[in-house]
Length: 127
Figure 1: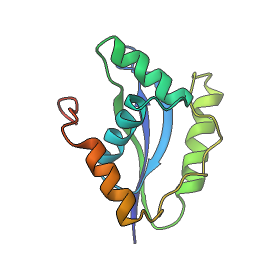
Figure 2: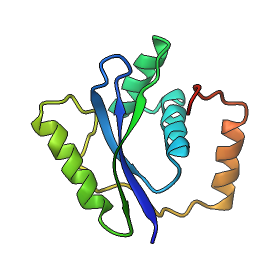
Figure 3: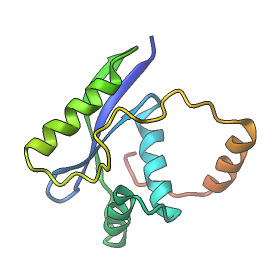
């Protein structure tokens, strides 16, 4: 069974969770993907928030919320997003969750382009 992880990206100063997501890959890879998306100018709310942190010399903190195997990640992600919204947290999530693309197969051509784009990219310490 494939492992999945529900995680939160936290404000590095307040430790408040600002984004809830899921990954089926290594957390360091997913975190790096978030930083790369922010760097390339993706205009989604979460990446605008990350860019605002980076301009101040900061990056979000990763917090594991739940780990599971096989099915069930969609329900778990929805539950965590609802949980933090009920607490009045200012999440940057645009949806209620469960609609990610785990299992997406990327072509060799796309993988090569992504690899070239990331060559020499600096990642924060400890990630």
